[in-house]
Amino acid sequence: MDHIIVIGGGQAGSSLVARLRALGFSGRISLICDEAVPPYQRPPLSKAYLLGEMEQARLYLRPETFYADHDIDLRLGQTVAAIDPATRTVTLGDETLTYDQLALTTGSTPRRLPAAIGGDLAGVYGVRTLTDVDGMVPAFAPGARAVIVGGGYIGLEAAAVARKLGLDVTLIEAAPRILQRVAAPETSDYFRALHRAQGVDIREASALDRLLGEDHVTGARLGDGTVIPADFAIVGVGIVPNDGLARAAGLDVDNGIVVDSHGRTSDPAIWSAGDCTVFPHRGAQIRLESVQNAIDQAEAVAANMLGADTPYAPHPWFWSDQYDVKLQIAGLNSGYDRVVVRPGDGATVSHWYYAGDTLLAVDAMNDPRGFMVAKRLIEAGKSPAPSVVEDPATDLKALLRA
Image 1 (cartoon, rainbow, N blue to C red):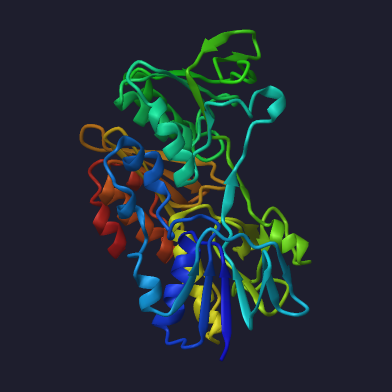
Image 2: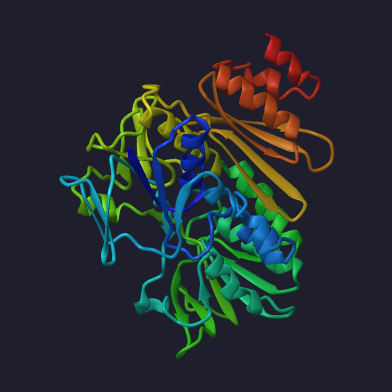
């Protein structure tokens, strides 16, 4: 009987094993997770879970009984020491498992600040796992002083939660503006204004010199010598793909596990999906860090492991919740040279990214209609004229029929 092993118990791993069973695979399936809890959602960790609005059990992607009910050998709290492609074996401590096919859904790890600048002090947190968030919950006391290092979506979401809970929040961003790596200046301006209106002290173009403290963090010193007192710090400065196992096994890696359009690695018996994976898309090699991609790519890989022979074509979309604003993003804005602003009622607005006359992406703030229309246009390869999009009189749904 064929044995498929999946290493990594996040969104991609859980989706992949579930899809294998849904497609009728009747062989052995083992899902190896290094955490002690079943696969769970990560986006709510920095939002509803941190706010205390969601219990741990509601984070689980599937009921705890799902894996046993579907004859999936769920191995919790186990770490893979090595993969040997030559013998098709996986080493777990003193145990060795043999596979017919293997899938790597190992995800990613937050970048940490170096110990030399205080990254190893107590009270310095990342936001990635249940353990991370459970560790920081007691620090979120009204009146506490939080320093957040990094003005990306993780940092901004953490800032929003901290302010809602009554903390004093200072956010430090080394780049000239928040969200610089992922969004247009118009979107940065929107969220800067939103956070400042809620009382967040945003320091842009402010490099961190070091975190201060003997054993526990007490503050942050900036490059210009400014010292910001802190009771704790949250670091949100990006993630690193977990490709170490693949590299040690001799697979091709390049800031992620390199796969072909079907999700197969440089070893024909090994596949990969999710945050850890680099794959071809429109003539480039990309790595997508999103729940949607983890699910869709994992399900595509499951089908291909069973012989579907279908290339994976991503349709990227993302979201972020901050205060009462839901940001929804469709497409990839890489290479844009123009942003069209479409205002709506009240706080509703969307930013449409163009390269020449080609619509690439949209950032929609409290604008689900704009998001859905833009998403469908992008997926269909349609690009309405920028002048039409920015005209408030334009019926967006009519663009789908054009």
